[in-house]
Length: 353
Image (cartoon, rainbow, N blue to C red; front, side, top):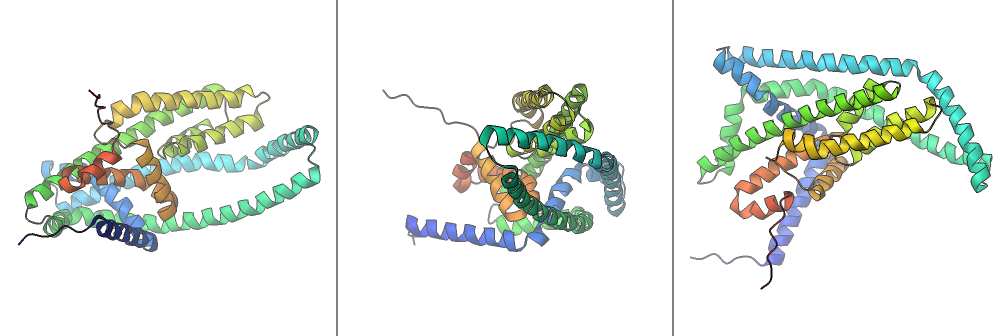
């Protein structure tokens, strides 16, 4: 008995309906799914350390997982403490910075009035509207910070459980999605884990190199809080195209309000552009590698969709998980076209006879 293929419009409708249900599920369950997603990413990253302690050093599994989490927690605590120390100094210096901002704003107001004829009263009304929007943004940021704090307490628990029951979870995935070709599904899982590890480690190394370059440039230019702004810009650089722009604005604004000449903010913008060029053409190809190459369209759409679904967390999580989808698509013949459209390899152009 031969099966009759469904018409294209039915298949397209079913696919779009399934995609809509998936996006709705991701949005509605974001408070539960975001910590789980971070935990999955961290579990994949920490798996080699846990495997070394358990297989090479013969530690019991529970002890190996505990040591892995303790080392990771200490490392992250040191980083957070260092950044927090820089941030506390910046907050303590806010009154002086505010005075400089007010002085620069008054000069800017005078220039706007003389150049465009906009009165000071009208500018003040516009500023009041921006201030009310800024307070709303501060409230949303505080709420997001509280959500992150709550999620941070759940992530270590999830990581512990994922590492503890990794064989059980992998067997479940193989039996549910493997069908008749379970060996192929096992190969896909191991390949996905290996490539994702290299991808995430490459991103971390790239972030470290960019942070060193940013800090060195800002220190040479004499920009205040160079280390804080350099690290922040390197972390924001993980968000394609948008992140480096935001990361460049902060030190450029600091240079604008604390320096007497426009050469310093211009120097910040120029040097950050050079660092971005080096990152895109030297660091990313050689450090992150070409194992998972997402094209610019796929990367931007993934970041924007991630931001709409999960906010800032979605912006950071979007690329690694789209990369995982690409690996899965590349291994499944029926989904291979989707893997190709996510990649950055251009098909060879055929010349007409």
